[in-house]
Amino acid sequence: MAQRRTGTRGSYAKGIAKREEILGRALDVIASEGYSGASVKELADAVGLSQAGLLHYFDSKEELFTEILRKRDELDVAAFGAGTAEAPAIEDVRDGYLRIVAHNADVPGLVQLYARLSVAAADPGHPAHAFFADRGRALRTVFAGAIARAQAAGTVTDRADP
Image (cartoon, rainbow, N blue to C red; front, side, top):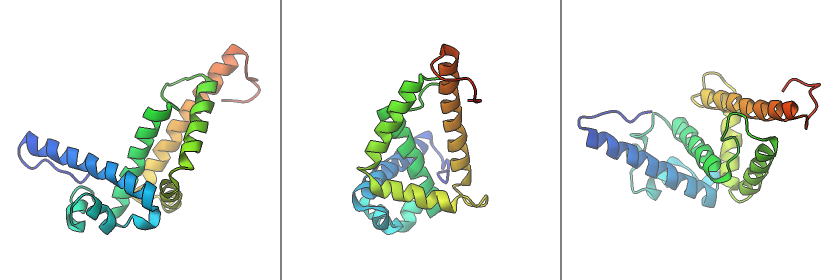
């Protein structure tokens, strides 16, 4: 995170709040304008900052876009509940997943951002690489927990390792 403590706790808290405002507004801009409308300039304009002012809160454009996706995941989990428990019921995982897929049809710009960034992040040196690796591990943990729970209940075959 590029935001640094610069003196008083109040200044730090204001910086965190501004960063959250930027991420929330960026989600709106990308969802409505699409990925192509999500240049640093467009995002800066949306929150009333210069490009340099916007990037004060992030180390790079790649970090900004990674944090936008992290915020999107946070909001999706809160809204749709998929993957909120360590070993949720398999039906809850399925239903949450389907709600997120349906929601993604309404935010194609965010889906395009995710797709483009995930390809670039396949390079271990890319700033978003750890985000995607961690996200994949977390999802596999949730899915495996749900499958193991269903196997223990006898509703899913135990012939495969969760």
